[in-house]
Image (cartoon, rainbow, N blue to C red; front, side, top):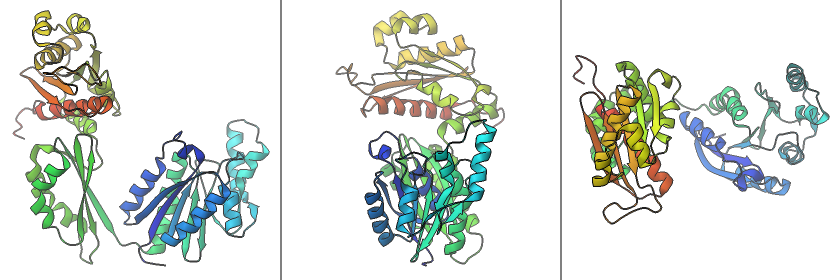
Length: 422
């Protein structure tokens, strides 16, 4: 077998092809394989038809030395994967006693009767090596055939993740003698991919041959992933980390974290460190800003609440926006969102507040305020800061982009701790 194999991911199930289930398994597997230095050559989805699964297996083994499959291992009639694999590898199905005892134990714990179809979960092809599934009833299966490794795992995401983490990845590392690899992720916001690349072009050009930089854009920012492959020299990670100060200096305030950290997580840490409370006043974002903030575990320590003031009457009654401000400047204006943010601070009794208002679309625009016109504001005890953007990315993306820009405005203007110069 080659030292560094190509990997193919195959997801099985009609529900994936019909769009009834979103394939998150492939994303997880691709990320985890990348962390150990294995390349995913192709990802494919196959229907619940035996002939199509066989054809996909034949094609996959021509492209890759490792084929990772998920799906089709349940107890119902449309779950064919196990039976197809038994025929494909010319093997009979046999009862795997440890798996049967595990399944029986699960049903006893829940005081539920065990049907024959549940018992059949413990049937596996005789030629496979069983991968114990401690978090479900369907075991994983490992085959090695003519120089190719085939692994079948349940399609249930938490079961697949358990088997990948506990069994598959360690075995692949050992089998293929995967050399050490290191990843460092730098999170940026507020700068597009092309502008960011231009700003660090000479820094990237000077990277050692075994270091590679990947640009992973998302709405409002870019994740930079620096990957270092072992070159026989010591201290690989330390050498990578030594390059980061120059990168941070180039990008300045656009860097908000290192590692797999979301913007709302980074902001939560800042609020906790500085002992500050936050509230929001939302119009065009309809509560999504509060949702992003409260998606962080422990956010109740700093997030106090939100006022979703979609109608101008609510803006006036709940947030104290002046009627003359609305009449003169309109609901979508920096003047209005400034008063919304200041009103949220008063009404919610918080240290800092954010406000949003805009024309998300697809209608409602005017010549001076086209669809995609967004205003955001930040307020604390010393200052109120507002910004106006115009971007038309479709209603949902306009709303999501507004939330990211509002969170970034908060990050950039949070009061510094006493005595801090940073």
